[in-house]
Each structure stands twice: as C-alpha cells, then as structure tokens.
Length: 350
Image 1 (tube, helix red, strand yellow):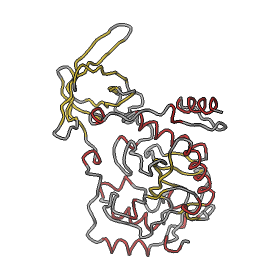
Image 2: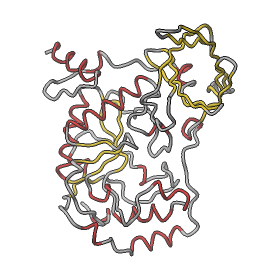
Image 3: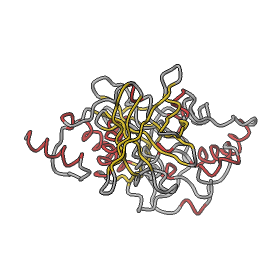
Image 4: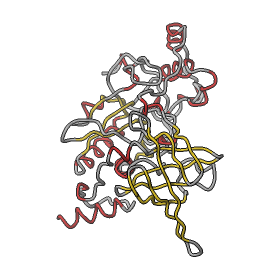
C-alpha cells in the first residue's frame, strides 16, 4: 500500500492524473520558502522589460518572458540565481554557444521587502500587488448604494438566461463534512469593502456538492480541506456588483445580460486549509486579486504555493470541475451542461 501511495504522489507531482490510487503527498510536498527569500519574490520592471523572481528548491530563479503576450510567464526562459552573499547573486546563463555570468543584487525597504533588482548595469523596480502591502484591491463605494441594491432586487432576470436544467440547491455545510466557509461577499474582506449578501451560508447544486465532497475526501490524504469563498449567487446580486463597479472597471465582470456561472449554482470559488491546525493556507494569490498571480498557470511564487494550487486543480478536475484560466480559485462543475441562471434569494433557501 505504501508503494502505491508513493507512486501516486510521484505521478501527481509530475502532472499526471491518477484516479485509482490513494495518495499521501506529505512525503514529496515542497518545503516552506524561507521568509528572507519570499520577500524578494514578484515581478520587476524597467527598461521596457518585465521579469519574475520565483523560488524553487529553496533557491531563486529569474523568469524572463520572450513575448509580452505570455502574461502567465508560462513559456519564459528560466535562469537560476546563485547566491554569493546576502541579497547578492550571480545569474547563470549557459548554452551551446556561450556560458556567461551576470551580477544580480536586490535592495529592500525597511520592512524587508525587495523593492529593486539590479542586473549588471540595469535597475528594475518591484511591482507590488495589493495584498503584498496589506492594501488589497478595493473599488470606491458608490454614493447611492441603497438605491443600487433596491434597483437590482426589483430587476427582472433576462428570459434568455432561464433556459436549461435547474439546479437543486443544497446547504454545502450540511452536505460535506469538514468543509469551511470564508464567504468573502458576506463580510467586508472583498473588493467592495462591504457585504453584498446578508446570508452567511453556501449553496450548490446537489450533484456538484456531492462531487465537491469527494474532493474534500481526496484532499484529506494530503492534509488539507476545502474553504469556500463563494458558491451560488442570485442573479440580482451579480447585477448589483456590476452596477456598483466604476465604469472603467466594469469589464472585469460579466454583464447582467450575460449572467454569471455562480448564478447557476454549479460554480464555486475555493481555497485550502490545513486539517491539522484548521488555519487557512496562504495561497499563491488572494481572492479577487487583479494581478498576474491570479492566473491558473502562473509560474511564479514559491514552489509550495504552486504545488498547493496545482494539487487543488488536479483533485477538482478528477471530480468533474473545470478551473478558470483567469482565476485559479474559480471552478465550474461539468460546464458543458447548460443550466438555468437563478434569482432565488439566499434568505429563501433552507
């Protein structure tokens, strides 16, 4: 049995789907990145160029993309950085025709975060994302919030969105043992800085909830459990969110006429927590963080962050969930099956 578990882990870490073998990943799970290195990780820019500093096997790597369209840095060139002394490194560039070394030095702010990177004679600045400095993404609160809320609640859902099968919504915490809730839109820790729903419960279509329960069981073999950030959302709440967004940022959300997969009850936003402590996992990005880290195939961050994100993706996919390319936390259950968008208030659900 132990051999099977180890084999399953090796195949999973290699990116291969293993459906029949129980796995125990603790043997090969990457180590936590040392804090002094983690504070240097991120995107740097200057001289018309951008690159990412990431961690792998306890060491730093520089990812240099060859095209600006490669926003995930998925096809970037990888250059290991050899540490010489504190914050001073050598970039190694080896190839069939050349073998060169270039000096690299980081500068930090008083809090220890890397703010610049000098490579040879060039200087690059760090691009900070909101959560890095405890300043998460927020939109200005609309002056007529109550008016927008009233208008959204009275609006009629477009008839074009009400075709297809209809979900049977169930309370996820009653359907899945051990699942945790961190419903961002029921509190203030979200892009609005205020709650947009009044009910702190999560609902999903029954079959999607059953599949999510199987993911929860699979994750237990790895020492993790699921945290739900958002599940079913009434159409009127999606309309409220769209109407509340500033005009220059509305493209970040689907229009009310398009509807949103969360309205069907078949989409869920999830993260991980540690079974041993109950504490949430610090994932590769925060929820609703508009940065390169939100992409499902972003190759930066720490090795442990990438492992945890990819583990979640693979186990969710085994149970019929498809991950969003744009948001690593957003999953849809069997998205090829057309389901009706719903506008059932959360208050009316059991």
